[in-house]
Length: 199
Image (cartoon, rainbow, N blue to C red):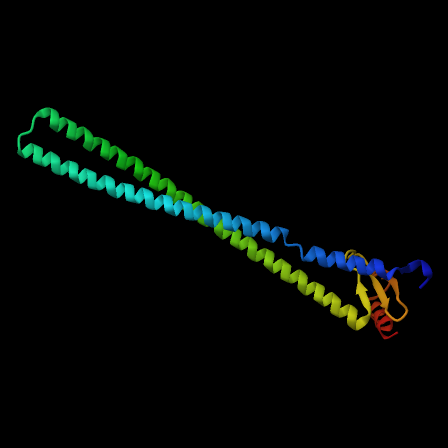
């Protein structure tokens, strides 16, 4: 190979360091973790609100029972019509309040269901990200192993040709190579690569 195809080793090492830094970027993972933590906090608040509403409903039911009991006692003692009407009004108000609290409880249950769906979605995305990260690390380790054993770093960016770099550590030199799959058979390409490895 001529001098024009030689590349500075420091540039290749810098490129490798940039690639490692890119693969180790935790920004998206941290974003997913933050979303998951927010989802859990919101779910905790909804559960607390749900418990408060449940307690309020129980209090309303107790008051309704008390109103019914008062109504029965008042009727048995032949209370005046005005007092019975007042108690009836209180009873209707408590029924109305119970209805509103039940509706609020239904809305909270729906919100909890949506939060659970969001949590599952975030967890699935986190697992996909972890798998991609592991695949990237595995590919990086493979590339490093190939380079150590063969002194060849393949160029994976261009799939239309077979190319890469031959690293000669003793001479501190990197040479680029290219094979056109249209002009060479797979057998000839394989033989040429073996010759480069055995040099």
